[in-house]
Image (cartoon, rainbow, N blue to C red; front, side, top):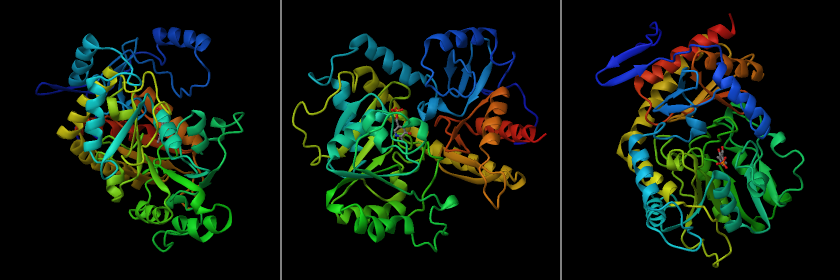
Length: 454
Ligand code: PLP
């Protein structure tokens, strides 16, 4: 379907049904509304639901709610369902493993799926040489493990970074004040520095004339004044900032940063929880930047929706003594089997699809940007794309309220989107997304923008 054409509700393409969202009720519908009321009574209010979606069942990029509404999902459950919802090969692997062995705990025993995932992750070369893997159940646990492995007196991280909400990972996080409010004191010794956010350069400079001042700040200022480099264990960095606003740094950012930190023996810890596992069109986003970190944190897309986190480090760094870190559930056999199926699919054709569909989506969004003054910046790699909304392209005043309303409008039209950063919309669909689904997304996004200003 060409972008701009009028939407069919169902199109048959061979055996494939290319669908268009179907919204039959007010949202939430009556059944969803009842569930949300029960949720309100019994579930923690700390969750950040931005629209009232109750997911009942899902396949590929399509989610149905209890009232029979059909949504096109460009969130993939916060960048998790890499292979789409309920990919048949992943479901088959999970079912078979569930019938064989549900749990035995890798802390005290051995079992095949965990050993195979560790071997496979190491073979993918995330740290550029021999590797060892520690398993947890989430992104925060993967980061927490990296923090414990690396820890000496001091560590570095970035403003805008999100590394998770457990106390160590939260200490590294510098995303939203609400995430830290009332939880201080956190782990001491962490210094946050500005990220390479070129659209809003923290130094008011312009790339490339800036000469990467944000990187040189380390030696020019920080190491000379407050942070003795020999006391720094590690620098924690997202290859592309995720929750901070899908911010892609310049191509040489990581190389230059790793060059400086490497000089002082500071470990380079890449948090690939959101950017890893094929999302950017390569297995790990760091590959785009030509840097092999010392330690990498993985989670989200790694097991297509089953809880699994992995901390991969250069083999010689992982010198923990037995008992110094472990997790009862980490690296559960069913989650590991889902990871093996996921990685096989990513290597098959999904990474290539992420690259191709990412280019299509980026080009479509840039086309929309030409006629929409409220879109200040469109950026991304593969299927990790951000659209930053502004009140004015010259002042770049953040249009947080417009962003929030736009997500609501898109939801009511059946397109699921999430925000990131104060005023950015993120597009992170499953890596199985088709060209037609990208076109449907662009069409609804464009129509939603027009509705916002109608
Ligand atoms: N690191 C990054 C880069 C993330 O984006 C996230 C979650 O959004 C985390 C860590 C924390 O992951 P989890 O929510 O699985 O603990």
